[in-house]
Length: 362
Ligand code: ATP
Image (cartoon, rainbow, N blue to C red; front, top):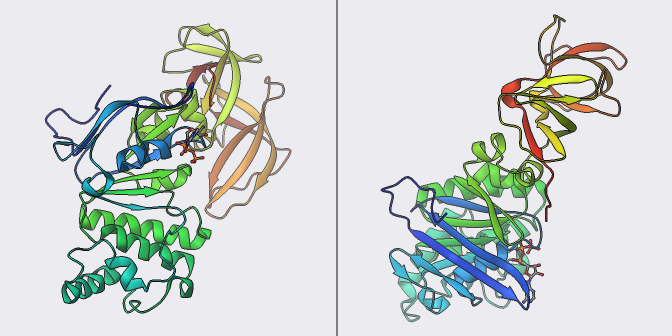
């Protein structure tokens, strides 16, 4: 489907049926997508699933075999990179080592002779990315995070209509990465620049994106807000790739319930007609209760392990009647700590359970 934007919303970027083959291998297989003006979209997927290929085609750094790309109402499919109106940031900062920060940033600004105006623009951009006064420095004098700020300033120098980011944070230390991620998001909101970011890090995608595009084997598996992707994965692939999950092998009992071992589990959603079924449940939805009462989906489980994790503790549980099954549950700080060996009632909320059939993944 070409778009899942609200009808009436004019997309800023439209990709239609985009394909790229390498020999017999389809790196990108008929991808269609619409992006709103000012939207922050993350392309998320495992290595080799075509994210970078898609970004490179939009940038004109690679040639598609089929399909069309439109930006701001203009067909740019055959337009050279320089005429497409985007800024790009790569994982490896890709700054010119022999140029100062100021010259790196001003590199794409024209006309070249307009020195005074460029100086002012560089100052403004350095303020914006949190590096005021760094004009005269050389890239080698900067940390990775600082270099990536310069790369971002350079990408934004011409106020492009589209910002393309190819794993811009993956080379950075965890702490710098989280900090820069939040800043990037704030800056993107402030500027309202339509942004596409490639990442293989699902936490990063969920944290920054307005919508996440989950890709698998050259195709789009699902497009949705972080909440939709996390709470309502449409396929087993998405459920497995995004967030943490418990998976149980189950068999269909009737239209509304399945069995795992000797336990019957009821759920609200549909049960697919596949030969092998797996039940999906997020750890935060495994609810440890204080009291037992006979009720559907209330099981008894033995606490195997409980690991302190700051705001959330992680508890391993072995439900009775389900040989070989261990469930992971999350407990908020402040709830009673569970002791290994103790038996607790565990409730599996029917509206939080999903059943998927077996399917191949990347
Ligand atoms: P990664 O995070 O590893 O970069 P990705 O999702 O961005 O993964 P792509 O770089 O888009 O993946 O590559 C998609 C597939 O196309 C990969 O299997 C890759 O090996 C293949 N591929 C990419 N470029 C070429 C090329 N020039 N020649 C042959 N195969 C290629």
